[in-house]
Image 1: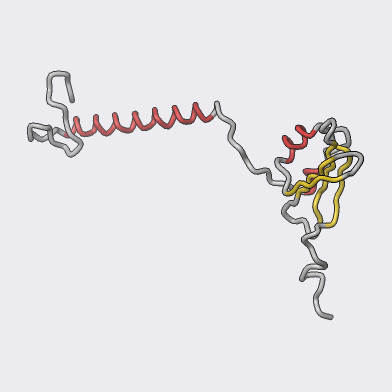
Image 2: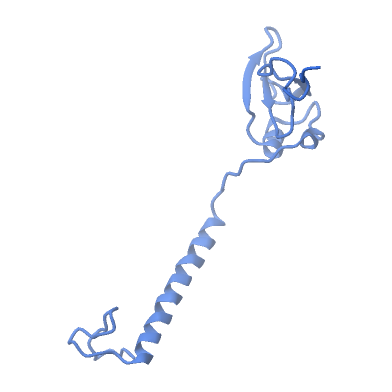
Length: 143
């Protein structure tokens, strides 16, 4: 094992003066490297708890059940994540429409109108998806 007065061992199993290291010294060095690596991993894991990690939400039709008029826009973002597309609307009551698509939706999306003045839900409902130009291939089978 390495002691303060000895020549520092190298990774290749020989000391800097050319002498071979014994088996126990090699095992000790291997364990030291593993424990250092484990300490680094543990430190990174602890630090990751201090940062916000963005995650994409997996939406289903049921995800929209709790969205009601009067709900704060921040609550909607926390529950559903960022909308797929947003556009402004209303020439008197200024608001933005947040649009959400989800897996399994066939030619529909969920729309949420958010008042610009108080950042609250004005209305929320399912609507036809404008990217859908008609029935899909399952519905338009040749008869």
